[in-house]
Amino acid sequence: MTIADYILKMMQEGSTPMKTLVFYNVKGGVGKTTSCVNLASLCAADGCRTLLWDMDPQGAASFYLGQDLIEVKKADSILKDKKQFLSMVKQSELPNLNIAPAFFNLRNMDIIVDDEKKAAKKLGKVMGKIAKSHEFLFIDAPPSISALSEMIFAIADILVIPVIPTTLSIHSLEQIREHLDTLGRKPGILYFFNMVDSRKRMHREIMAKSMDEDPCCLSASIPYRSIIEQMGIHRKPLIEFAPDRKETLAFMELWKELKQRM
Image (cartoon, rainbow, N blue to C red; front, side):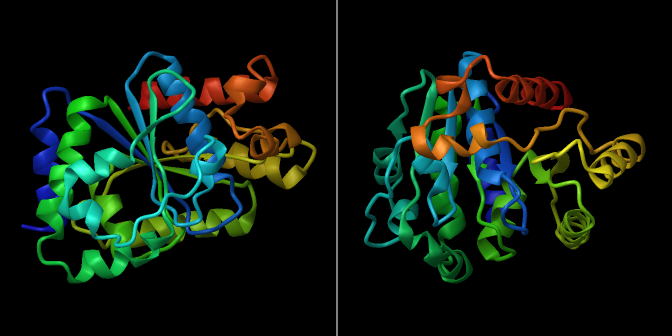
């Protein structure tokens, strides 16, 4: 049985099926983390028990939610003891939203997943425990293709990919799709356009073509605005410091569409 099979089995033992949304792009600088944080916050605001697991060693999602990198001496300790993993989980300032903060040793998880024979069973127990207490799991995945990212793909219900409407970003999206086609179990894919500048003709044309031809492309999009960058100053999602801004409303529309498509 593969790592993914073990984890899925443990997750399915929960009384309520948990939806797992993985935010990913192999290309950096596309707004992956800000999107994950804002949409997880909106999910929690809907009254859903939500956990955001920051699996990117840079810890940007943790930072945006007011959490610093935590100290974990051995990365495999979160696999060995589900109680230790649960002790990492913090309550954010937003009701219903918990966060499992990043730690720098996450960079070693690829080695553990590859070499630890019992990693599947151990991580499966952790995921099973999460599934019993949460309705949604949002994962901010590292921007790489590795043993860890492939394990994350295998347990995802939906891979949510933010894409800037440029030729290179569309090319990166196709590379991700080609890679997923090589995997035994692949998640559903939904992507949306992020950091959109409607003044640019290329942005408008790429978006129109994708929305017209690709059923995986969401119609809601997020504009490029400095208010989103201010999340790093406030260390809060938009809904907490700019609830009435049109950028926040754009994320609300995106979350509404994501829920419908799930």
